Length: 471
Figure 1 (cartoon, one colour):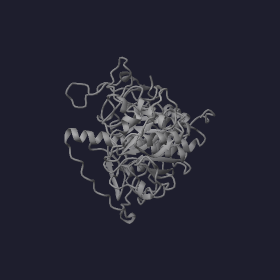
Figure 2: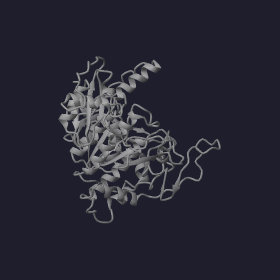
Figure 3: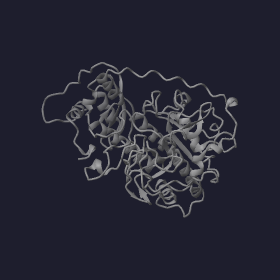
Figure 4: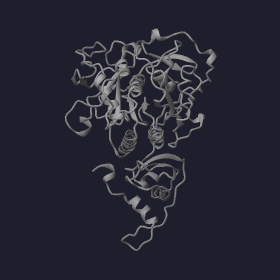
């Protein structure tokens, strides 16, 4: 039975008694004695259609406080200092990434990670002006050089660690009005909430998408389009489910055409074992993606750098080579999942893969030849599927510019149709030890390593066909 098809647990029934529901017995339930401890954040999935007052009442009765409620998807973000909050709401309905990390620390007696150094404020006058396009092998691989510019009407939500507002290659592209911080699960439009503080990651991703084509520094796949900084990754590098839900819902509310998610939801490495808690995370993210897609936003996500087979058949219990792992949000049905290749056009060793999961591939680089892009104060190379995904998002931004009336479905179909097919490699022995390091299932037009193939920016700039009225 699906997560939300199940009847409410006894803890939730108690909540209904407190709100005045009639019960079979004459006993009158008393409010629970709330425990006191460290206040933690929870994401809570309610039955679809639950009204906000009812959801807030249930959270309060379980010794929590509602931070925000998203009625479109019946998901709340709440805080509670009571260790029993999750059990009262229902462990199949509530999850706290903070609690999960604290429990892991207690088991391993690990010390908290030291705070990362704060990024210096970028001085635009000190950013190098040398033309670095000659070092952008990644742009040549996807034919981005001659693709031209995108439209300023296209705004891409960069769900990441923040975008440097002072970088000269991004200052003109940054859409401050559509930027927000989502670390608490509730959008905060203050610049301090969405600006980067310790990580260069979001600025690097934004530059791959939209760095200005002014002959200085690097140039993005779709110069001319705008980017919104939607901060979902905190200063320790965590992307908690409530932050991801907030980012997706914010993008939908602002009618952004695209989002880029170069992260996977923490605190696990990957959701390789599905318990109630992982089911909650999958459910709330799936609802947020489904809603944002219906609102006109197409979401792109990195396949992760865990080098695991994400083939879904293994998770469903059917025969298959997959690991049973699930990368969120990349593995969700409505998300464009992206694997990474190196400069040799072969799947990077770190890139996760999976038949039926990977949609397309793009340059992510390998050690020694990474992807050059913007960082606070200048430019730097980074490798990963985090770098591959924004290449795809940039290509989609060009498509959205050329097809202003196209919805997510048509953009996705056109992207797939224009991709350059790539066959499975005949030999994938990266270490030279005589053993295949991964197995590629499928055929040239669609396989687990590359999906439909390498994205093509030049084809996207001049798409064929007319917008689909069905969007």
